[in-house]
Amino acid sequence: MNIPEVKEQITVPDGVTASFENNVLTIKGEKGELSRTFVHPKIDMKVNGNVVEMHSKNVRRKEKALIGTFVAHIKNMIKGVTEGFEYKMKTVFSHFPIKTSVEGNEFVVQNFLGERSARKAKILDGVTIETKGEDVTVQGIDKEKVGQTVANIERATLVKKRDIRVFQDGVYRISRGDK
Image (cartoon, rainbow, N blue to C red; front, side):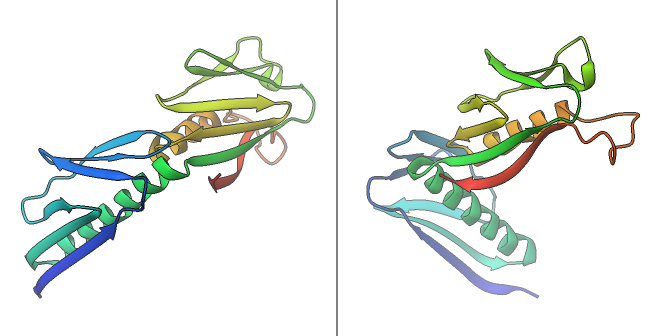
C-alpha cells in the first residue's frame, strides 16, 4: 500500500541555525554545533530559513518510518545545542569502597569488588563527566554520545561469575534527560 505523499516540517527555534549541504545537516546553537548525514534516495531534505523540510512521493511504510526517525534525530540535535543532555549515575557498593575518577578520555573505577586492577570505560568526544562522592554526572550536546558513554561506564562495572542479586556493586544510571 502506497501513501501518495509525506511532508514533514521542523521549525528551528530562535538562536539556532540550520544548514543542509551534501546530505549533511548542521545545526548550530549556543551550546555548540552538531552535524549528521541524512541520505535516502526517496527522501528530499532542505532548509528554508528556520524550517527543515522533508518531502517524499509514493512512499512505502519503510520510508514513512525513516522520515519519523529523521525527525526524531533532528529534534534531538536541536535540543542538544539549546539545552544539552545530562545523565545522573550513582556508585553503589556494599563492602569494598569504590573510587571513581576521570583520567583523560577514560572513566576509571578503582577497588571494584576488591580487584587490584582498575576498570576503565571510554569517554566519547564532546562528553564531560563530573564525579562528586558517589554521584556521577555525564553531560554533553550529542544525545547518542552521552548515552553511549553512560552505557560504557555501566558495562565496565558488570559483575561476572557471581550472583548479581548478592553482588550489586557498580555504577548505575539513576536518571536521564535534560538539564
